[in-house]
Image: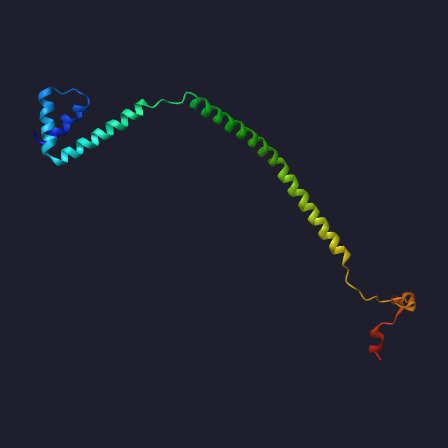
Length: 143
């Protein structure tokens, strides 16, 4: 028996579909061939793992807990969206108020500081002068 045929027959060995003659030929080849023996051990181990998983009982309340968690997440998401809509209105209003208050404080600060302006007092005699009656400079030029 060659290795390829033995590997095909090994799979049937675990399914117990082999006849007695084929079973003895596979066992004889496994005893002779080290590679096929390793493959047989790996298949045997894999079958043990699969049988252990099949024997494992599932928790009947697992799906209930998962669905409750999903519903709780959905409720939280809806509540978060409600806050988000509230923030969509509140945020622009607060920004507008803060800009208006900053502008008001800026104007107030600008009005508090007034630079010192020298006071030019016009003598009272100057206010009584009539510029229209003053002599023209051209009169002095003709002389």
